[in-house]
Image (cartoon, rainbow, N blue to C red):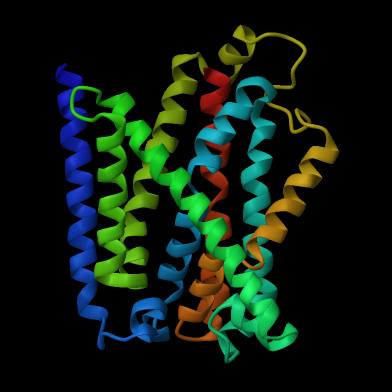
Length: 287
């Protein structure tokens, strides 16, 4: 009960910090217009660009999803995060500067210019449906986590309302500035939790040797061939195709104050994604 109370205080403090950051971000909204709200007046440095993109990637699939795969296939589950990182680095190196220089602000605008208004309409509808499903699942997951970790304080429905409410308020108040600044906290919390947790899990099992000795045989737990080459290639293709038209990546490239910051920020985001994937896999192996 005491541990749950402490966890509840941490959750409340975390949400209050995010809301405070969102309120603070309003000072960067020089004008209450769409350019400032959606694209931060194209004034973001590379470090905030990196936070937007890495914060989008280091989520459930890159942490819990990798740990789940590592439970049965070992550290090679980190290839999933590596695939995201590769896609981000490629985008940063090849496309980010061009997107920042272009007159387009969304992927849909590019589609419309190339293929016409009918295709533009279809792409908008598909993107709305896609984001609705993704956001609905994320909100549901947030509510499920709150209700499972803190059942004394949150039911599933209450957890969903709190999870959705906090992040909607953050976005509505500060737009992209709020998303970027709050992601500094999000990425830091995830990084610290996973790195220190992974190290603790490894030490508790007696290090790599002790952990290896206690694991079932027949699986390359600390090898890179736990999944077939075809599956790994499939992950890289999937993430490559996903990253190129990804709303968050494109929006970050557009919001950068110049092509150099767009390029550097997205490449940095790709590199930031790698360690959490590896340590999440260690969690799965230890489990």
